[in-house]
Length: 431
Image (cartoon, rainbow, N blue to C red; front, side, top):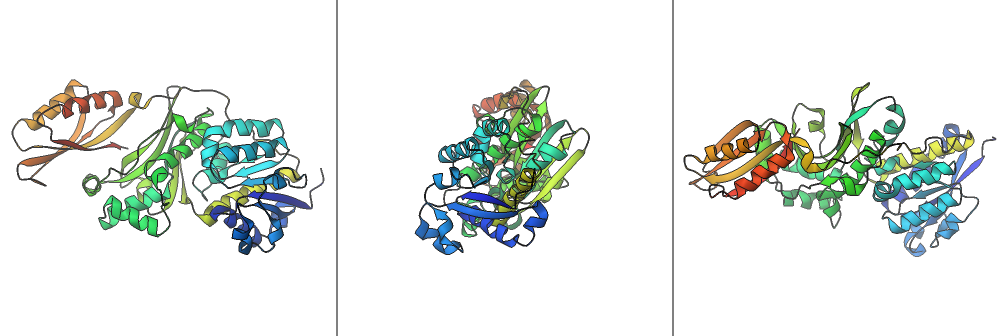
């Protein structure tokens, strides 16, 4: 098949990421033909209101308020969707594929819910469906999982995949800030949205975990399957106690394949300071992958933002153009070829950190230990501190060995019912 002299793109969206794609393609004008074999041209860009975006482009004539000007244009080869959300984005991507157009997207919300169906639809038509930017922004994660590490049986992925929460936790640890103080700075610097719920409650990270789990374990894992907790309840005391134990606290995305089932979750975790993930600070992201052949791999870099995300999108565009020119589009297809069960969170096994306030009197620690022993919860360490907040009160910090979450939760329920427990202040998992 002859190479195409020009490959034309339709860009759905010209917000932060869309404008980054526009700028990155302009920066690559001199090199794109050498890199891909074709000149790449943005023919149309979908915006909500042309007047609001006219000053962002060199030629206002390429702007449109009608998606069909892109989706129905036979000259457009690749549709790049960066509008976000799920309902409209799904309809646009579906129509693009049905009309024979390749799709590149950064839409983690959609890929985490309908990605498998869209990849199958693309594969059936010999089309590329690419979504490198949907996980960890500019860090290559999707391509390594689909290609470079395909010769492995992957057993575990750990990910710091939300820059907002990592920035907040770094500020809390390094500058002794409260959660609210750190969130305020994250908002002022543009790391946190006006409504940060998706980030701080772990929803954003959970979507990325669903995508990585599906690719790593070749099983259809969706957002609804991922257990998630956020960082809103973490305090300066938690950060301090973690430090005393030689750890830092990170919001971790965790997915494992154990005994024929998939575990997928997002939660705060104590990470030993000598682990590679502990050094990932501020808005940086990292993904730690364990495979049977490669052993351990860590991918690190900017996980979000205009240009890092645009970097991943333009990389996908370039690869699609190469595939068009070599008549090999649609060759990856779906990597899902089985359906493994999702293990409920209460059936998983983890280590725990628990901090509680108790009356400062004899026998309380013995009662606590007795409850844990009754529920087959093995204790690793106990730290008792007197009079931190009140002179007649003590703080007990306990870390456990690996134990059943179900047994641990039973222990907490029993402890809460005791008169000798004033408050269970924190429960955090430990790597």
